[in-house]
Image 1 (cartoon, rainbow, N blue to C red):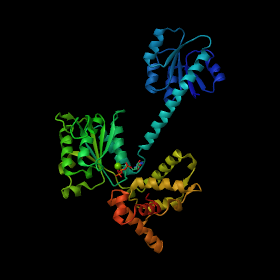
Image 2 (image 1 turned 45 degrees about the horizontal axis):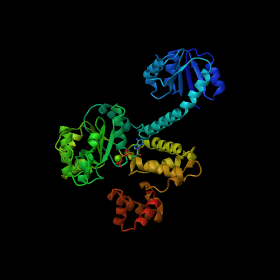
Image 3 (image 1 turned 45 degrees about the vertical axis):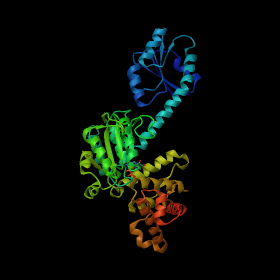
Image 4 (image 1 turned 180 degrees about the vertical axis):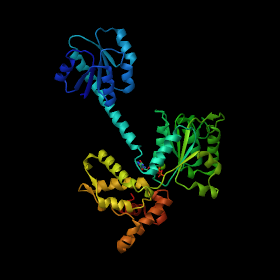
Amino acid sequence: MPRQILILGAHEGLEEALRASTDARSATVHSARALLARMRRRPADLVLLADTALVPRLRAIDPQVPIVVVAAVGSVQSAADAVAQGANDLLVLGPKLEARVRTMLAKTYRVTRLIEHSRSLEEEAESRFAIVGDSPQIKAILQQVEKVARVPRPLLVVGERGTGKELIARAIHRAAGVPGRPFIAVNCAALADTLLESELFGHEKGAFSGAASMRVGKFEQASGGTLFLDEIGHMSLPFQQKILRVVEYGVFSRVGGTEELEANTRIVAATNANLEEKIARGEFLADLHDRLAFETIRVPPLRERDAEIETLAQHFMDRFMREVPSFRGKRLSKEALDLLHRYPFPGNVRELKNIIERAVYRDTTNELTPEDIGFLDVPSEAAAVGFKGQVARYERRLLVEALDRADHNQAQAARDLDLSYHQLRYFCRKHGLA
Ligand SMILES: Nc1ncnc2c1ncn2[C@@H]1O[C@H](COP(=O)(O)OP(=O)(O)OP(=O)(O)O)[C@@H](O)[C@H]1O
Ligand SMILES: [Mg+2]
């Protein structure tokens, strides 16, 4: 049953009757102002009104809540008017009103459940992309995001892997303030040039064998929104030229097409490569860098945001415990937190998240200890770890470096280390890299 019914208007006895016959909580409010204030405070599940005048304002507050107008007299016309104003239905006062409201409640029950579900999904999505952190560095970045979000120029987000570059790109998109516009991400490192070209620009029918129909590319899909070009540092030089043309002149053509199309999207590019070095080595076009970097947002590595480790660890714990209710009620011990503070986090925030989730999963006592966290390659402990510990550290370093070289392709890293794939998987699990 719906939880909260709000009633405005003199529907004598309706509230009592509903209270007696349903398990919904209903409340009669006595003024439009009071009703609007309650709706703003907390979503209602059904609103009953005496006339349609207020409906558009209620709709503006809550686009989804079922609103039913209870009128003294009813006609096909008045019902149509109510619906045109944004109401869901019209009931006519009379005997058995309460029974009809109950039927209405039953009918809206499914809708209410769907609304609740979609609200919780939205909240979940919001929290998934929320930027957590109170360090001066993150505060400065958030200010930069707000400032630049409304300026239609390309942006560059740079930082080590796992520092939160994609989250920041999404925050820029959100702060640009047009809900419903697309955010489209493309991983430029994942595709060969030819595929990337048709992925980004689309292709005309028959542009190449296999192009059976016209295909719209990501630039067009992202129209009016944001195109996130991830791992831009991995783009080949010829492809960088093509991107430069779009960024510079705002036009492009589909593969196999001649028509010039306008690129009406904001570009946010990201990289964990050092572009200055790449430019010096002739691997990245200085012109493209200059065009993309209207503003550069530098995301510092986690080890430079020490104050944030606890906040983030707590955030990831809370989220994981919400996701898996049987893990609820766990705390982080002081010793575990000390260990985290000494660790340099080469994988940055993503690594912290994985460490925390695994520790929550392993823990059996409700308090996360250093044992739950497992082995971390903490530099200052080097001398204290003994023979086995040092061998383990060396093993782990070999794995981390090979995985880095192989761009996290485990099969490739295994070949590189002359291990079988299964051996590599074993060592990764042993060192918490799985
Ligand atoms: N400030 C933050 N608050 C909350 N979560 C964060 C924060 N920074 C990063 N994360 C989380 O860490 C993970 C990695 O973030 P993200 O994918 O944005 O990093 P990235 O810099 O794009 O990494 P890569 O270079 O590997 O692509 C994600 O799960 C993200 O939600
Ligand atoms: Mg990323």
